[in-house]
Length: 218
Image (cartoon, rainbow, N blue to C red; front, side):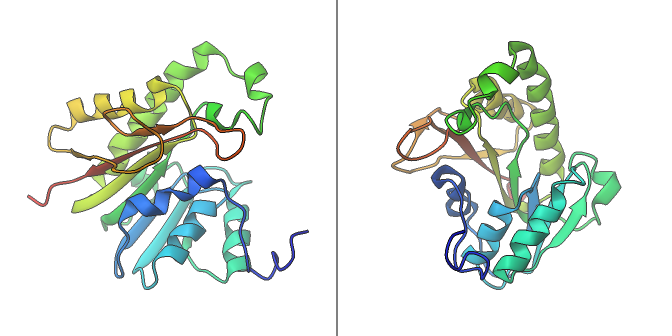
């Protein structure tokens, strides 16, 4: 019901989620991957924040949610290549061409959006966290393998739990000795040594976590 929404004049996205494009250092000519992309808000933000990207690929495992990405692209008159696939199963979908930039917004406990979805307090269990952490680390290692030397990967969750956030990055850095953690110099969030964590603000934004990793040229 927002005026001009269907005409593509505006989009609705949480303040914390919008920060992803400020961390990706997008430049014309880059090949960009948005992993776990549905419903496509960040995909569209990527395309709007940098003109003349070489290619943007958006992946989601959910057959039901992927059409929402296309709906958002169509509404904003944007274009990306959409793939239904498990991003971690790169043999299933990857064409062998590495990416300059990857946004990895992993499946998580979603505890950061609890102000908008209070049912999370009833639906989540402590036993959920360990399996989720395994999925998150697996996705991170898979995406790292298809990132170009000199490329940048932004890891994101809408969780407030360290097991899904900076501890995942710490575990990853122990496995990938050549990965470089890029400090996030910003006035928002809390410095977690391996990334920054935004806690939910009732008057502003959801809870979110970001970390930036770069692959050396050599």
